[in-house]
Image (cartoon, rainbow, N blue to C red; front, side, top):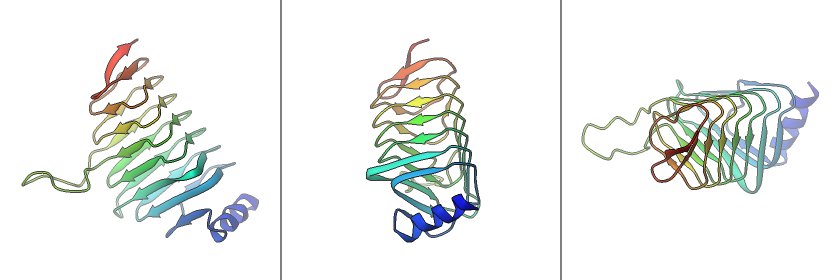
Length: 174
């Protein structure tokens, strides 16, 4: 109850901007700086979540009533992280995501005639570290214990226990 009051106070002070509340939030969430939430779907956050929105806000968006953004325990989002969810994004436990990283499960616009903008599920498994200025595109699964090097664009699945880097991201080390 005390944490709910603290989060409500943070919203009133303008540190967390959202139009609808999170459906479920675990114990000991921390929001530093600004976190902008646009929730038209479902957002579930695990225990010990931390969003560090200084000097640039962390942004999390669910676009549709059927959208699901599921975040596990001990997840850290650094400033400038932008998560755009139209279908489903699942972030596992103990995941660290670096500054200015974008995770989008859809293209937000039509590229070609007949394109589908409903999105493709993104799964980021446990113990993943995503470096600074990375982009994770629709339909990608990043295996557990993997590292995505700074500046990488993840366009296809990354297996477990590897380091991936580049544009597009490729496995460079096991």
